[in-house]
Length: 132
Image 1: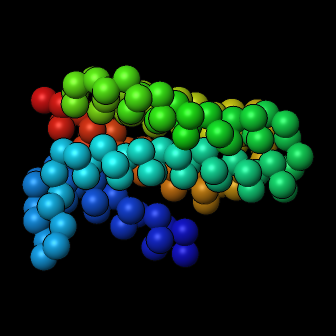
Image 2: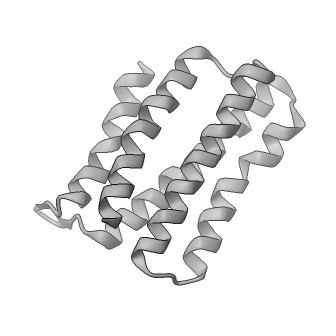
């Protein structure tokens, strides 16, 4: 079920990459940045649930980091390529924490970890190609 909900979340990245316009929405560079901000923030929010289940203090401390990171990236008003580059770096940092919580702490489930690998494998190319 999580794959059925998670994988389609990649669609807006590629609608933006190809500048596809649908009825009332223009999927462009600005929309790409907005969506990437939301998704990066969401990835941290997942760790509220990890904390509630495990009481791991690192999980709750980390849970706000992606949102704060995205906020600061946006607040610097950088060029598009710099912003996108920092966001893709943020996704890989979150993935590193996923590795930590999966292999070292053993407090996230295998299905979620595999989904995160797949989503990062889908998100990173969209960001990197958009910078080229």
